[in-house]
Length: 56
Image 1 (cartoon, rainbow, N blue to C red):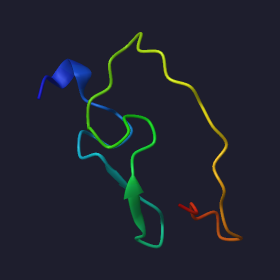
Image 2: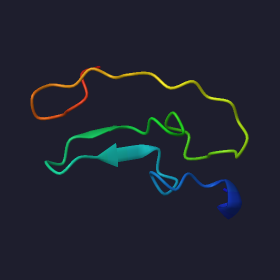
Image 3: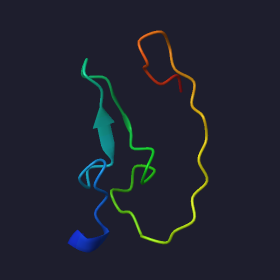
C-alpha cells in the first residue's frame, strides 16, 4: 500500500476500536485502509448508544 494514501484514522488497517475494545470498520476510508485526498465523500450522522458505540 502506498504510504501517501494510507488512511491516517485507522493507519491502513481498515478497522478502528473504541476505548472498550469494540472494533468497527473505519468510517473515513470505508474499511479499505486507503484515503485519497480530493475524493468526494459524503458525511452522515451515525446512530450511537448511550456509551457512544456505533449502532450498525
